[in-house]
Length: 544
Image 1 (spheres, rainbow, N blue to C red):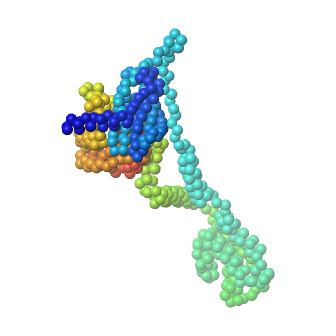
Image 2 (tube, rainbow, N blue to C red):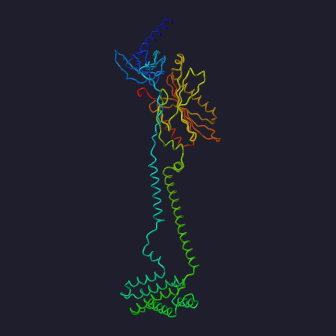
Image 3 (cartoon, rainbow, N blue to C red):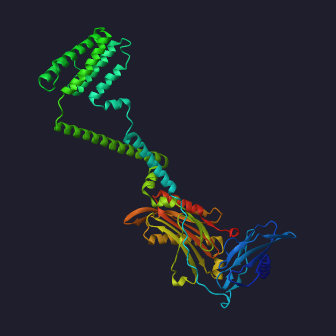
């Protein structure tokens, strides 16, 4: 009975294996030449068939994946899937077994051997030349001229406002021009304006005498007695007599009597409603004109000391005026700067404005021109603030025959950002391939790699490591393991909080990983890492 079951199982196995066949159109090719790898599957019409996707043919590189050709035969489908493969290094290579899923069962193709030969070059007909040197390509960056132009326009606007309202020598009004005239000239001009008025024509004697006495009082106030405007007629005449007796002015008694007569007549007109003759009013006007000349002549000439003091006073006034303008200019400039800072701070955030003004490396990286590129084979497509540069990773001697590794990295010591993309290829034996073929085995391998990374962090001095794990799915549906969390790092003698994230993918004998490290309290770095994570893609076969 047991023998019967054993034979039955063998026949079932042969039947299942017969459902999947594979072949290549040539076992010998030249470097870069394409071979076609074909998989034929027979399956029920209700079965779901999943063919290999991605770079599962390593060490050969898949350059094209053709559409599935489907034909129906009785109650079954015959599916043919073809792949274009090549290799750019000479040698003997083995195409690994490929996994095909039919329904819920997994089937594997046979491994096939391919020989890649060099292309023979007849050096007698074709000359050999050195490799051309690298050509430096100028990096395309955003033109700073627009920003510079905006700043210059803002500065010019502020300078224009300050000049126009503070430093510009404003055109004088008629009143200002009159105010700058000497007291004598102003008094004469005021008499001329009084002549042009219509007070006498309209018999407005009160207004006429008010203007006339104000002219003489104003002149005396500025040149003789500084309380002439607020003094009564008797007080003013008394003061003039005292000054005359003290030889401070040289007015005749007649001059003082004439002034007293006109001032008292004006008081009668203003307060007692007296109405002198128009001609008398004109005569009083001419008398005031003459008395102004006499007062000017009666005033002593200023001494040299007085002239010097007057000049110093004028210079001091000019200095005060200039100092006032400077203070006002500085105050307005500071106010505008503070107002601008507060305005932009309320809209964009004060930290952002501060970092824009004084500079912040992480902010410059975040807002700079990013690079989207492919790294490794099979390629990992990723966007980064700068191009990742290849790093040589020294492998222990016992691993050199078992694995190959390519690593690309960008690290900024100032901002604390570290981005690494690495691809590791394992030279598995057939037994190892069988052991690692299941999804559970792949998941365990990724988990072990994740644990190894955490151990490396600890060996480099990281402390207080918090570990979280979750599934990671790229925008083009590639699935992997994400290990992330926080830690404490010693940077320049200080313990600072940091974050890390490692994304692991596994396909057949290839493991791809993206390692990210950054400072936890750097908001710009957090935004950069989110952008990097959202950009990760593993190129599918159809996209090659």
